[in-house]
Amino acid sequence: MTKIVNSRLRLLLLCILLVFCALLARAAWIQTVRASSLAAKAQLQTKAVVTLPAGRGTIFDRLGTPLALGEQATTVVADPMQIANPKHVAQVAAKTLGLKVKDLLPLLSDRSRGFVYVERKAPPLKATALAARKLVGLDFYPEERRVYPQGTVAAPVLGYAGIDNQGLAGLELSLDKQLSGHQGQETVVRDALGQVVSTVNEHPADNGHDVFLTLDHTIQANAEQILRDTVHKWHAKDATAIVLDPHTGAVLAMAQEPGYDANSYPKALAKGLDTNHAVTDVFEPGSVFKVVTIGGALSEHKVTPRTAFTLPYSIHVADRTVHDAEPRPTERMTVAQILQRSSNVGTITIAEKYLGETGLKKWMAQFGFGRQTGIDYPGESPGILPSYWSGSTIGNVPIGQGVSVTAIQLASVYAAIANGGTWVQPHLVDHVLGVQPTAPRTRRILDPAVDRQLLTMLKGVVSDQGTAQLAAIPGYSVAGKTGTAQKPIGGKYVLGKYVATFVGMVPAKSPRLVVLVSVDEPHGAIFGGLVAAPAFAQIASFDMQYLEVPPDLPLH
Image 1 (cartoon, helix red, strand yellow):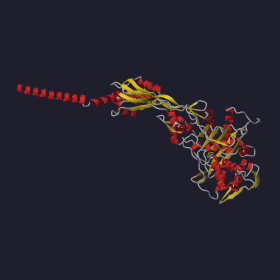
Image 2 (cartoon, rainbow, N blue to C red; image 1 turned 45 degrees about the horizontal axis):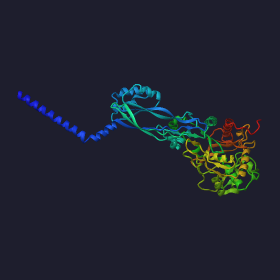
Image 3 (cartoon, rainbow, N blue to C red; image 1 turned 120 degrees about the horizontal axis):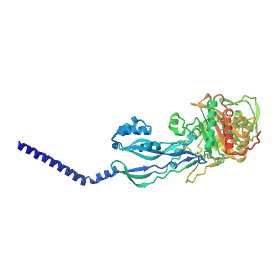
Image 4 (tube, helix red, strand yellow; image 1 turned 135 degrees about the horizontal axis):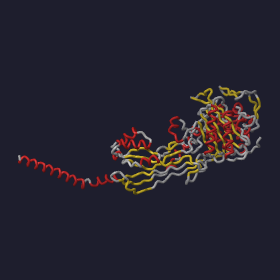
């Protein structure tokens, strides 16, 4: 029996000796062969390089009112490998931050991951309350959340910056480089429990530049409200308005209805409300396009405002018949009356007799149709000109059919007429802080003498004999043009679907503003003089008072 016990003891001793030798060999191997690689891993486990996000620049209106800015937030992250009781931590975090336990628990229980987001850009007060619980495995760091304090004001123009503060649409996208800045970097050292011990090698972030727009938030908000009332009154599909300084090309308002809250951009995107109609959408302008035909004929000295024509109610062009909007007998009209009364027959007669295909193409190009204005906004459409000319094209294009334009193209052309004949590139950005601004492009499109003639004739449109009597503003002279165009859908004009437009300038004697209003698919009335002109009058009247422009006519 004693011999058996001694044998077992010796065997046990031998086993212990062998295990000890193995451990000793393993330790020696780790300390020599693996020393450098393990040391590197240890460094990685205690040190982490953290990116310091740059603050995104603020977008201001022309007077310094913030339209888009960064708001302080706190991002909450977790290391599941350090969380002993995931269920408890999930319950506490969910209750404090207003989240759901069922969403957090799988993340915090996944020990294969060393980093998960609990909530990106949480409200600072809630994050502070959670930090006070001192839960092991949670960490907090400051981030900036993009907010739009004016809500719906200029939302489609501003666009949106996403969760990572990267511009995704609108001016936020086109100005992303200037607004973004440059990220910084720091190295964070933690102890065995994951607590921060120190921060070293700090390179501060370089914040983005602030941007000042040409928009005036008061003019913008007023235009949006008037469009809301207009769409409601006429049960329209949508409406667009532009307020433009004809001398500088500065866009003071670019509004549309329906609108949306810029803070809810993802919802607006899902509903298809995010498009900036004034820049990206095209429409057939109708009679507002007649300034191209009349302006071209005047410029080539083919006619004067007093040149008269005997005009029937309708005219045959190739295989189609075109007539004026209102029935009338055959009568004699001057060029000025043709524009004043928006005669389709008169305009086509001038185009056929004096311009033809070559002349119309020349003057459409001269006015800038068929190409982008170059406005500083992404996704601008160049418009659509006829791809080929048939016999009936000469009966369409002179009166604004068979050609599609953008609202900003149209507004910029009328701005050129308002300022003496010089086209000025429209723009939304006044300047980027710290960056030398680029002057807008300009080019002369009309001789000053011809421009004065055209402007005088456009005043007649708002007179008692014109098509836009409802565009009149007490105390101010107004010049402009109405447009009523049937909508083509799928290559065919659809009965009952029209776009009603009015573009005007005020005061007409020395224009301070050009205002465009376009209403898509109104019901109950279709004419630009009835649907769009009153909205123009409301917008322009408010703007004249707001900008303290003195009246140029006696008040009756």
